[in-house]
Image (cartoon, rainbow, N blue to C red):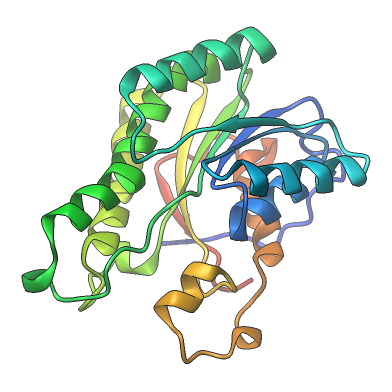
Length: 251
């Protein structure tokens, strides 16, 4: 595990950068979208609930940040062609992609493996694993058009050490950890794309509230506290670091 150093990003760190953030309508994704835009990025907001994406769009515009874009997609039902079409549209509109942040995920059932239904398992893996795989694969040619680019997978502590009753969620995050290492190894020395994961730790989100209903929300950090860690992995200061699993729990 790698600790992210205390990081003070430059105000224009992401100037002229194109950044895709999945699950951008709420929680960590929303905080990252607004924060990246404040640091100069043109953010492409991905998610399935258009009304939430529009609210984030309006918040970014109200801050005077670069005008974002909205790309609605339902990861549960999306096909490989849908991701290929996305890559074509991103390339046509922006000509490159500097950063792809995989944030969208389902929590799924909190029950034992012996009681876990196949339908729930299958649905969760489509969203948490297959979607990031297909999206990354489709977007790699566009990522390669940037001078330096970064793909960041949002992980979890249960993806590194399995825990009872975390079922498909834990298994899906473990799969992403391995995917990071595989992509980094395959692209070492042949590409300027770097691949890393980050474990946000306890964060005040709707998913966290579902997983820990008795927890007092104010006892865990707000999503905005994660911004420096993600900016570090997205920006030029982390060039050369790939295939690593970062931990932001100290923030």
